[in-house]
Image (cartoon, rainbow, N blue to C red; front, top):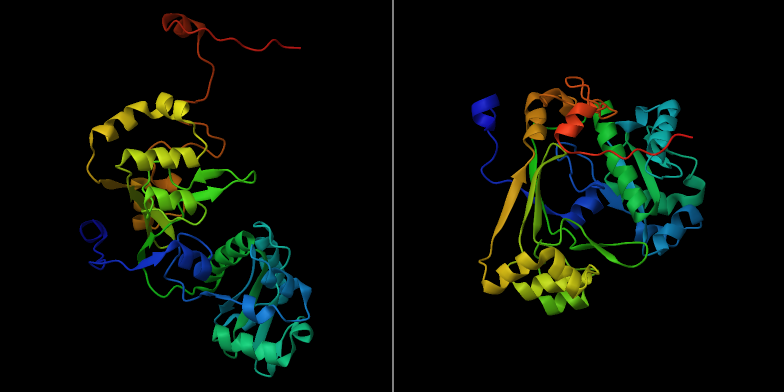
Length: 329
């Protein structure tokens, strides 16, 4: 399609990255591989520093300290750094520490806390050179990933750091479940996605189990996704049970599926594309609304039909629809 529509030759095989690597290296599960910047983990290095802002998160299992090297970023002004600090606060970050590598050496308000040896190690680990800047994130892992991952994309736009025009990649090995605050589990994709282990192993390792789901990402946008589906009844019952769905509820809601699996079902899978998002990328549009025939406004209103709007009583009567509105005070 890319060749016939916009005369672009994509490779026959797309590279693959695991969900875990995507989050660790790029901070998002839809990495834009046109950007030549990676996030570097600093936990081990920062555990022993006399700087609690870094040593605290570095020592906690649910937190992280990470660095983002920006080529040529030493020219970024303090005013712009303040702007980026405000930007990452959207994702929960409480600040944005940095080290500039100027001609006369490293410069940063945090150098006095890190010391020469740790600073030199940071420069070595990130591969930073004179003229670069290194940004840091130190907080809960989710906050650090989202903050640095989105900052990476914003910096690439501001500094024009994209190395290629098209960069497709498969993202695989997504977690099977996500833990809720109350300890219960939710399906990352949906409860019919097959896990990568058998049912007995899944019961013992539900919190770390991986799924057989996959996403296709192009230029940082997910354009398609799918999975290998569960085709064994015992596996399906196990997944529903782990999600807190009782046998009676499972039979009531999914009895038709469980019965079908009892009769025998071949291994199967699939994938769905987001055609509108794909068209947006191919046309270079800034918003998906530009490639949708009848897009809604930011407030979900339809300019063509003026929906949502009141329905005439005559139409309601014809459809035998009764509307019960709350009484006005």
